[in-house]
Image (cartoon, rainbow, N blue to C red):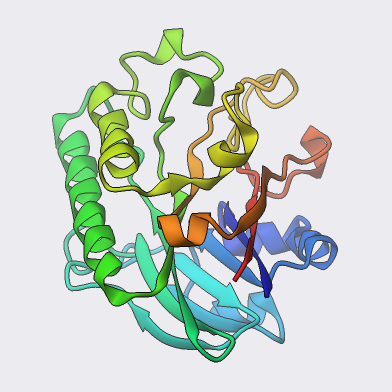
Length: 266
């Protein structure tokens, strides 16, 4: 059963809907959408998404900040936010929804939004590393469930030089620090999780998923690949396609991030 899953930092769901998100949904027809930076009250998410969606949403306790959600055409059988969701500035950054696929399989889908961090602020980097540590624990715990597993979201780190156009100029910047990148090395190399887009794209530059609104970053494709599908090995084997759905032009963007889309034949 082919299942198409899209992950996107919507940069505010209300603004994304206003600027063309529904036209994109109509064209791409994803079965599941995971969203980051939803940035709106819980009661508005279902209305903004429209009919036909099962919605799970973790709202941030800071108004107008963060917020993650899963929208599925298939029924969501359970949702977890986690015991540490009340930790300061951890709210609205992790949600896991379990979705029944056919009669015998369950897909656990996570929408995660990692802190941006700031290389000049030890406090902000400590917060970011703490969140990565919490994610690692959850991901390893999830492996015992027997479910097919997928972590999606804006992880605010470019893993390798291929994932960042101006990597030489960002060696000391948050989002490309060795300590941040090491988390990906460990999850992929030691624990067997799979970067699904890289699996399909191969060792090429990009495909980038975020560009600054400023200057000519989008037109010059001076981007970062910081949005991911990270799958358990069992799910990764079922992936038939994956891409970053870059808008055709600057003025047709409805977010500063492009959706990351993959299809799994489950």
